[in-house]
Image 1 (tube, helix red, strand yellow):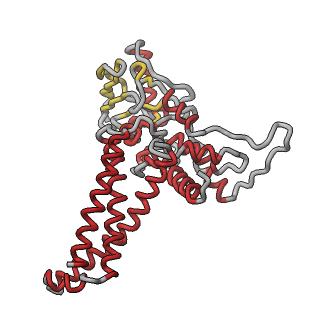
Image 2 (spheres, rainbow over the protein chains, first blue to last red):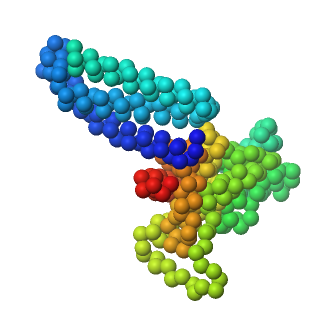
Image 3 (tube, rainbow over the protein chains, first blue to last red):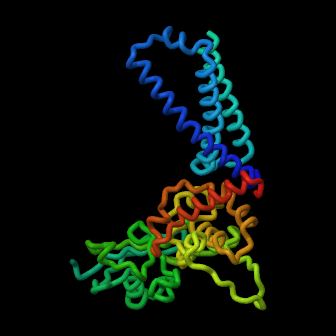
Amino acid sequence: MSPRAQLQLWAAQRIGAAVLALCVTVHLATMIYAVHHGLSATAILDRTRGNWGWAGFYVLFVLAVSVHAPIGMRTICGEWLGLSDRAVDVVLAALGVALAIVGLRAVWAVFAS
Amino acid sequence: MTDKIDVSVWRGTEQGGFRHYSVPRLASQTVLDVVTYIQRRLDPSLAYRFACRVGMCGSCAMTVNGVARWTCRTHVEKVAPHGVLEIAPLANLPVIRDLVCDMRSFFDKWVRAEGYFHPTATRTDPIVRVQPDTPARRAADAGIECIGCAVCYASCDVVAWNVDYLGPAALNRAWTLMNDERDSGSKVRLAAVSGDAGCHACHTQMSCTEHCPKKIAPTAAIAGLKRATLAALLAGRL
């Protein structure tokens, strides 16, 4: 992988981190609100079902995780496990795709159920 | 304060062990004084490296009680108040013998980071007047007092994990040149310091800044390189 591509990965991970900082804050605040107000699962689903705002927010959240986590894992694999070849990059790219699929499926579930 | 110092000194190469010596304790005694006493009075076979003895040349750095330090300016009373010293070669560098490291990988990385001057003028041009108070010049001045002692390099965990990582000193040098208005190597230098072996590998643990004997902040220089490379990437210049 070229240094330029490595720089692009670094930039993507940092941008992903910035997005996650916002998303995690909103997510935690929403969870605390839901718990403090005693919202049931049904009440929560009533709010998320068909709500494009929440769907868009969690799509952004999932995509940020899918970008951020595999790139961070790539660094950990290289520095701590000594694994830094193309096969690792392919496996971690697959991990990113898997996170996106699982996450988007969950978003779809609370949007369309 | 005891009148003797119990000194353990690494003997051997990568394989070896600590040998113990008892050294008289003196006022204002430096760690380099201790090593020199051992080599001249107790064990002439001890190999170590020094030159200026006044904190200018950067050749006497060693690991003292687990911390990389310049030994000529490190007083025994500050690092060994109880009279026990353990002296080893610098970490993250191959050991040639005893306390002497092979510095080639350290300095080769300065070259790989384009840590050398790319001139814009010739000897026939007039001398450039550099204003000392511009932001760029201040940024350059913050890092130019590096003496190449490799204390930062030996203190860096990323160097230990990633042998290709350029390290704090080379990146600090690159950043000083990025801010030198007389230099023309910015583009090639930004490419050289990018990627997994470059500034983007730094985790901002700041061990380099913590231990630099010249109080330089390579972490700040590396952060500057990160900003500059990102700006160049977004502008399509990298």
